[in-house]
Image (cartoon, rainbow, N blue to C red; front, side, top):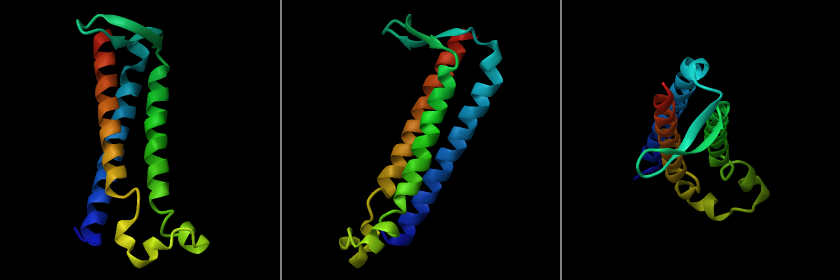
Length: 128
């Protein structure tokens, strides 16, 4: 793949991740008041709850995913800006398409936000 295709895939996956995180926020916001103060967050193989947390734990999960999205998006641009100036990463000067944290970071963001949203969806639907 060329650099232009990589950039499009990267932007698309980050955009989808942002949409998933927005849906994550809206879903928690809509159902937060109807949840009990203590919610089941872990289930055994038979679907029986065996781990509990306060319901504000859901906001922590959202915050962690949002922080990962922001940090990976920011760190994606470090090799082309700061490290070039510091001359710590000279191998990327010759071939900028081999920047670290490009497509893999976007895929990681998309997967973690989607998996976490699914888990939160299951947790909330268990209590409703």
